[in-house]
Amino acid sequence: MTSCQLFESKSDARVIAKVHDAFLYEDQLSDFNIPSGLTEKDSVALLTEYIDNWATKQLLLYESKQNMTQKKQAQYDKLVDDYKTDLFVSDYENGYVQKNLNTVITDNEINEYYEEHQQSFLLKEDLVQARYIHLPLSYTNTAATKKLFTRFSVEDKLELKKIKLSFKKVDLNLENSWSTFDELLTAVPSVGNFKKSSFLVANKFFQYKDTKGKYLVKFKEVLLVGQPAPVEYVKETIKQIVLNKRKLQLKKQLEKEIVKDALQTKDYTIFE
Image: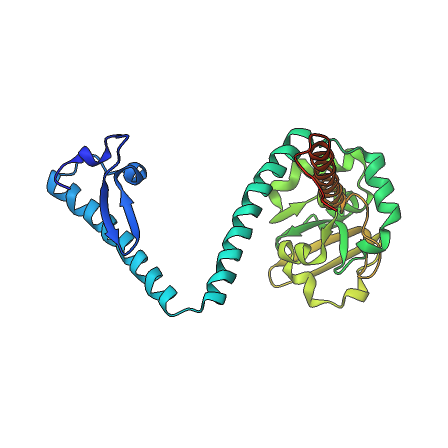
């Protein structure tokens, strides 16, 4: 261990260390990389530490076997063999699936799955489509802004965008997608000060103020706990379910084909 010649490739790899019946060979050190810039002394010290760690593990392994029954050793050996088999099989199957998986999922497939399994998508939390504006307490044009906000025509939206810098906070696009009620509370925490039953209704306009400002909130659509989730809200979940089903089908297909081929080529024989 006095030079980096240990890392040279040799066909007759020599033994570097021995612990009982376990040997560490020179070619087993090929994956051990010594950082550049180290002195020869530091390199040797680092390599020695690596070898000591290997030896420590071998000694612990030896002692563990000395204190373990043959039956238990056999059980562990089987677990190792099963794990190794699973690793190889999983890697092969995943490669086959990746190569052959059709990842295109149409809206028709999504809607069909949704209709067949709608009861699997019952809501566990309230969903809303809403918009809101948080105005400063000093805001003096509340009535006009409220009119724009509630009527909400194309022209009204443009006008609101023009004056939005005078608002403390605003989101007019939330109503274009579903969000949980808790997500709305994150944006407008003060809504949580009221009973849900007083405002959590479709097409409900809700106006109030507190010490932090004035609020305009409009609930376009509302779905409560226990109701079926809208298909667009669970679309990505359905896609993943469909993809997983296709993956399982491909794996089963691979298993059938590989057994069929092995029987035909006599690589797999059942003896009576």
